[in-house]
Image (cartoon, rainbow, N blue to C red; front, side, top):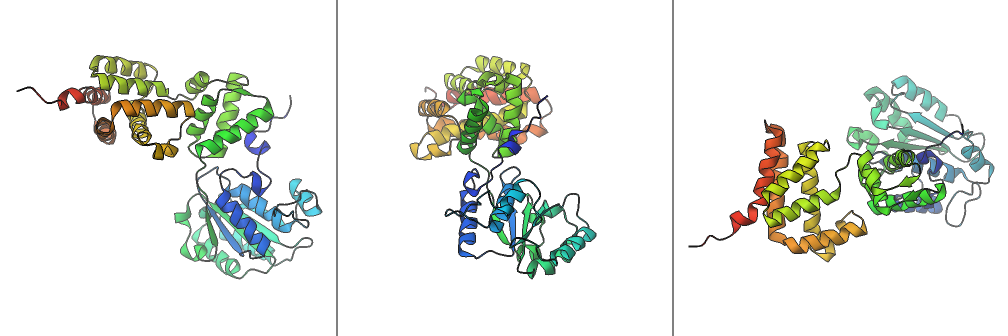
Length: 371
């Protein structure tokens, strides 16, 4: 059987240019390299799977490259780049602080720092999940981090910046990585699907990207899973079913029933939702998000805030125009209130149904009564 390599590893970026969705970080790092103004320590913060460790490795490779391109990218041909690509670099060291978090581990690292590089310009130490270090380990690290030898560079990465002690933060240049935009994730998935010969419906890629919630590594893991499930033919219907996501068409239908004042249809449709195995809180959260999207879709200026496919963008615009701002705000107020109070409810099913009945009855209740 052929050895399978997951997409997150197979298509891991090897240059700053190929990093997805973090241009504000890569541009700053390239400028620092070009001008020779490299800090002695960097702290990469941000959610999981957005490129922190990848950027750390690219930075480590690039500053040791002996033949940088005009665009400040590693050449991938010199001895330093070749040894890095083969996993045999003697100048780049990675420490996983989740499993090496004791003061002894840091003392070993500090002792290693004192030895100059045998080849190349810099010794680079990448410490992943640095927030996992013990207090004693942090303190043992302070002096070396503040005044390391000229050839030593430190790149620390963490998903929990608030756990890093201030004395460490003050010694590092801090880079905040952001969640990757849905359209950037979809674009990258299209690229990989093309490389792998995977057939896909664009709506299916949007479902995968939305499920990943801004994490590219998560998106690639889900993508691999769905490619296996669908045998290389990603369809919207199969992805929604396999990922246990409530189809957006349900929410569009609910809003239409609210506009029509049809309590019975709203309750029957909720029965379908329950039969598909979705719990009430999951449903209310999705309904509130749908109403928020309708509110955003009212004004073309805020359409860029809609993280949906172009097809759904049009549908949101049409339904928003039909509802109007007053109705959308009223429905959103009801759904948000019930979502907030859901955990306190005794009969969860009845609680959600009362919410739906209130929303379906809103226009009738708000209409002026004849004298």
